[in-house]
Length: 257
Length: 265
Image (cartoon, helix red, strand yellow):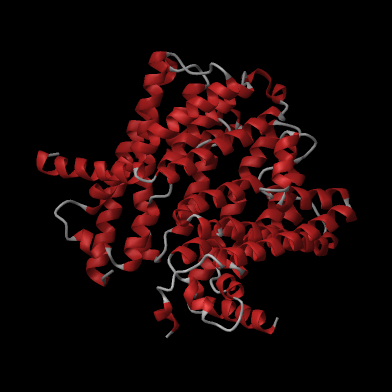
């Protein structure tokens, strides 16, 4: 944990190198998230509900998704480029260290716009979602668990290149698909699609299930989200370790100097 | 434009086409992503109480056809501004600036080739998705011709804006934040998901007066009224915005070049 703590400190320090760029990226992402929500405002100006969900519920979901995304890319930004790092042989530099390579791979590259994502969760929850400040601890808990699921799912997708090295572009498409699906309420889909979104392609575990947990005040659903976070984190580690056995690059040891 | 410039530009466009066609996995990914978004909205429109719209006459099928066109344009164009941004950030733009043909022209030519390839592939994919999900929704033959032309103009218009957004890195060091805001304005004011006809009156008026409407709503609205009826006004609107965007792109490129000359890349 001390090692992870040190990596996180370095992550935060790296932003100080270009504070203006980091702040502007965060600000623009904040604005970006709110502008996109106008689409939902227009939707609910025309329609009373979406299968029982009102604009407050969609705002709740949007807040959870942006918080999850922000936490994942800010604290574990390396996950976004994991496939490229593996294919380019960039793993070598991490394999030469005495610790498991995954923490340094994931925690080393903060994406500053993630701060804007996290900040925009608050207006989604407190203003557009009409949740009270008292709801915040539970919201932060489930949304952070969702971040773990998101980060783990992306890591699993990116690990595909261990077996299929030419699939870097495909991994990027998979990632985009995944993020796109999380942003929409999944209760409108058929049963089969929902099962898929709760298991193999766990988009519903990131937005929909945590939002339902808050909407229904369900301890069982909160526990389900927490359990899913632990399971997907373990799964990501297992898939990465499995892929690592196939890794035989050895072309970037020069980076260790 | 003289043949001395046209021939190299055609070669650049062919290069772009080959680059995209030579990456079938990327094309498959784009098609899957495109189908996925159509499937999401097919589900959402199916769960939406459309009868609450009243006399607007929008059905699930029409809204899906509308979305198929807007997403076709969005997916076919992709995120080419990143190339200009990357070239400015790593300084490789220097080498391109020494070429006898303007950087913007050659860049656009490559992009047109790339987008042309995705225009064909995603167009077929969209048609297949519509036929599967919504049955016969395609416009009449003249309507289809107008749609193809209008979508091509829209893509060209979007590309011209991508070029300018890429150049934003000359001043800001990074183009992505500018792009995020521009993209969301495109989604909202362009009517990516819902036609501008169902927007609140004031917002709809603002959106229609913006260039974004010419990029998404204008071509996609051809799927709402069956095709050729509003063709002339649609194409006129797009050509007008195209002319304005060309002037803007030229001005932005010149300003960026001046900055490179004064401060280096």
